[in-house]
Image (cartoon, rainbow, N blue to C red):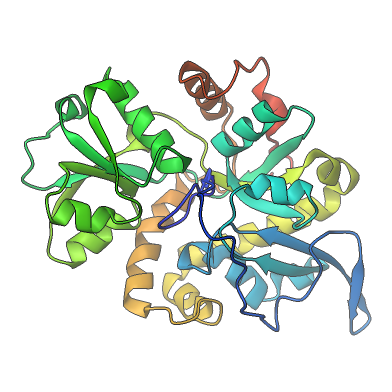
Amino acid sequence: MSISHHKNGVARTFGSLVALCAVCALLLSACGGAASSGSATTVGSKPLTKVSIGLGYNPDIQFSPFYVAQSKGYYRDAGLDVTFNHGIVTDLIGTMFAGKSTFVFASGDELLEAHDKNPGLRALDVATIFQRYPVSIIVPADSSIKSLADLKGHSIGEPGPYGATYTGVLALLKSAGLTTNDVKLQSVGFNQVAALSTHKVDAVVGYSNNEPLQLNRNGFKVRTFDVSDYQPLVSNGIVATADTYNNNPAMVRSFVQATLKGLRDVIAHPDDAVSVSQTYVPGMNVDQARAVLAATIPIYKGNGKLGYNDSTTWLDTAKFLASQKMIAPVSDVTQFYTNKTVE
C-alpha cells in the first residue's frame, strides 16, 4: 500500500486504496518514456533507457526526491529517460507485473501481502525511501488518552479496513496488548480531520506528515502515537520485479542512485525542493507543501542510512503480518529486498 497522503495504502502504500484509478494528465517535458524498460531514446549522442515508476498517488510534495532527480538531470546523467505514472490504483504491484511501470513506490507490507496472494510473482524492494512508517493515531491535545492502553473503549476513526492506516492501527493496538474488539473502529473515509475536530470520534488514524499538520493549522491541537515508535514496519520504497532486477541490475542501481542523489538534495535544500516540485504538482500550496516536506524529511532519514533495507525491520514486519493472519509465516525475508543498489 503506498504510503501517501489521504490514501492507501501509499501506501504499503504504503497502499492501495479502493479509490479512483486515475492517471495524472500532467505531461511533463522532463518525463518522457514508456512504461516498460529496455527500449531507448537518444538525446544528443547519448542513448537513454526508458523506464517508469508508478508512484501510487496524485502528484505530491512527498515525491520530491523523484522530481528533483528528474529536474536536475540526475536520471539523464544515469542514462535513463524516466516517466512518473501518477494516479491512485487498487493494486500498485499488480500494475507493475502487468507492464504498466518498471518500478513502483510500495511498502514492505504491501510487497509481502502481494507475494502471499501470488507466490509466483517475485519482486523486491531495491531502496526503502521512507525509513519510518508514517502512520499515527491522533488524539486531541487535551484528550484523556495519554497512552496506547488508554485507547480501550474509545472510538477510532479510520479510512476503512485496508491499507497502511489499517495496518498501522493494528500495530499500535497490538503494542498496547489490545485488539480491534477493545476499541470502536469507525470508517470515516478520508475525513479524519473533520471527524476528530468535531469530536465524532475520540481518535483517528492518519499520516504523521499530513493530518496532524492540518489539524494544528486549523487551530485544533493534537498529540500523536507514531507506529514507528512502537512497531518496526517497512514503509515505502522502490520496488522492482525480480526479473527486472536480475536482468538489468546496472539499470536498477542507476535509477536508485539517481533517486538517492535527489533525496540528498531534498534533505539539504528543502526550499529548493519545494520550488522544483511546483512544476510537477499542479496548484501546489507552497506554505503547506513546505510544512509537509519538513515533516517528511525525518521519515526519509530514519537513522541516517538513506534507502537502506534493515534486515531486522523486514523480519519484524513479516512476523507482525503473520501474527495478524494477514500473511502466512515467511521463512526467508531476505528474498524481498536488497542493499546492493544503495551501497
